[in-house]
Length: 264
Image (cartoon, rainbow, N blue to C red; front, side):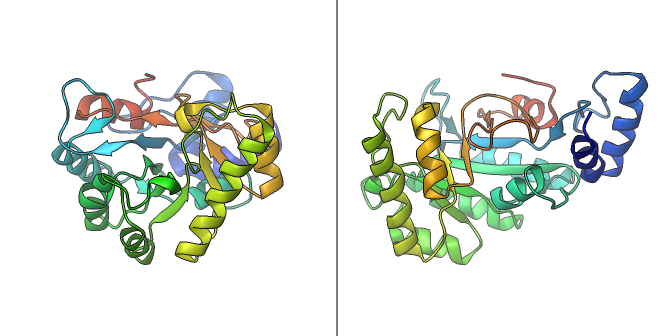
């Protein structure tokens, strides 16, 4: 293992240090209590959770987490001493020299649905949590989506608004010109409307290509998140191919995704 790999694991927490030392002679994952994270040798534990709708569940639609379950999930994180961190903190820790807190978790929300403002945002405020909301700029203010005034209020309360493109296209099938339009225009619009800096993207549908990554680099994006499932990270993994965990509307799978006991 490289010095950087050791340093990153050492920095996560006392538990992480103990796990790493034990792994030198016993190269297996460390398992603690049922609500404790599982630490994997050579990897950095920092799950990024992915939500789409926080609203009453519609049938078996996997993209809806009911507001009461979401509230329970936030309470679970708080009561089990998880530290909700920003995507900037995640990036600076994985790819820079900042230290991660113990039990780090990132909350992300795709598309910019109005229920994020109505249901997710108040529950997060209750526990002092921050989150990254990836918005489709062409849909802002449309039926079922957040308005710019809602987004401005969320920014004032410490929420992070980032890009999910202009029209939510399949970037893997798009040429360089379309990739550039979607990534540059969404960045420009958000920055002008909110007075913030856009540095992060969530790929629509998880689709991207080498061309997409090339354009992201040229435009100064720091990260792009995928729909690949993993709670673990490494500086060796591209900052434009960061995995996340899709969250369901129940507590058992939620605890499993956060701790690393469930993979998909």
